[in-house]
Length: 191
Image 1 (cartoon, helix red, strand yellow):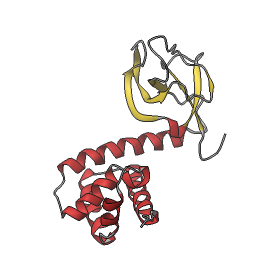
Image 2 (cartoon, one colour):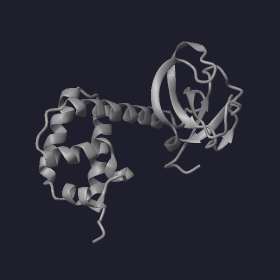
Image 3 (cartoon, one colour):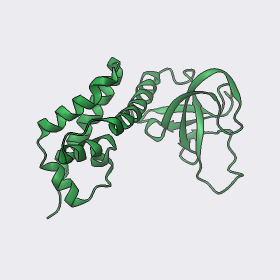
Image 4 (spheres, helix red, strand yellow):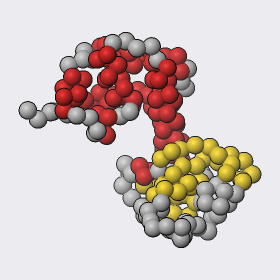
């Protein structure tokens, strides 16, 4: 398995060690802690790390999912435990934290004090990751590229400062901002 894309072993319930499947870390999203499993919605003995995967994207293994309720693919809830994931566990926790921080920042952006229409537009694109994921028109992209980076950085710091982030959370927030700024600068609009 590619070191940049490690395999993560998932299962439908926390104690279903016989039916596990490997997914690329990048194919797992919606990280959260829950005591209710996916599928039959069994209550666990405590909250475990859960996330979502597409049922047809597994690399190997088998999950307790039948596709009997309709044609595949399905987005299914899975449980991720440390056992079997010892080597990648720090990356799993980082992915889960970064996913959580993206949601926290998105929520905070709705409540933030607005700066200026142009700076606000860039911040909105950063928060929703439009520069790296696409989904932005040429005209809007050109307008965003004209906004001074210092103004955007200041608005970003104003947005994340009151969130009282842990070191890992702050690192995830910085990584999100840096990735989006890099994507904004690297994108060369066609004339």
